[in-house]
Image 1: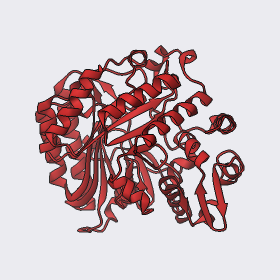
Image 2: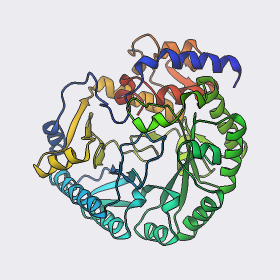
Image 3: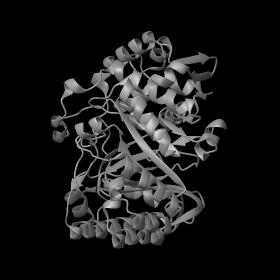
Image 4: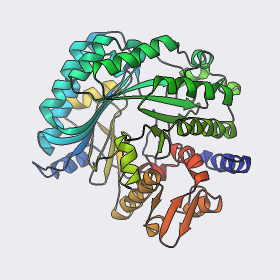
Length: 445
């Protein structure tokens, strides 16, 4: 990626700074029409009972033993097992309330458990969680079943249990492998420990070992990120997801411990991602969507090669799962164009369920035009091209519009077809990952 593209991308990102998405602790629904618990209940009741169309399910477990300085998730540091048990009690109530209206044992093609630190749960609690899912939903044999995990808490016994419970993919949240960068965000994962955990996960029978990398962290440079990529390649992960880090200390006060002067500039962040992409592609990994890399033969790579890769709140998938059921505090659900989020505050989420109400804090309702536009944008970001240019023409002019991207060489329009250019692939993951609210629901997640 040449310097002129980096400069143009930095200007684009700066120009959209005032339109960026709200942090996870803030409302996703600024300016949205009033949507609440009754609307979600109505959408659930309209679901065709006994349908064979698969859904996606997300379970949010917000508990962590400690909090990293870079964290921008909805989490709670807690050391009381009884608190987690009470959370699971409320989760069971929510599952029962949802499936009482939408139907029991709906087939599921994608299940993801996120947090927080899901593998902070005890073995007994993990078994209970799996049993709750099995009671209310029916996982298809080919379902993607994944869980986020802290490698420091992933013992051989726990990994064997997770595989026995049906989890196929484990996503280790590593952030960076450089010791200096790790210390800057309050982490300390040694290379030897991570190598052991990866080996134990494979021995336990987990089919897909995934990891993440953040770029834009304090102390990162092109030299350190290339070394991190080299160490990551030695681990032979099956999937690697790459995300841009943005300090938002006004919403997450623990991030104030990170010195903003120690963070890479916008241009440097794009150069860091460039180094990541070059490193994995040169090692034979397939670049999937805008921000992930997978081994050749991965179902996601095959889906992209056949232009059927999709993305929802959980992430990239080869399955068509229009309906998404989210459970737990802050979880996202989407049914028939209705997008809602649960209460972020755990106590308020629990209180709503105790009162027999769906714990919805707000949402948006998309009309047919908006749904078509979002489908088009998702197709573009997943498969790099689409043939529905008309669906994107009504995006307002200005930063973030299709015309703006075309002027800056990020997309190419040819008749009714739109495609992402090689330069655009390096840039749009950053712009769309920190995008304006109009892209959150009817555009990119």
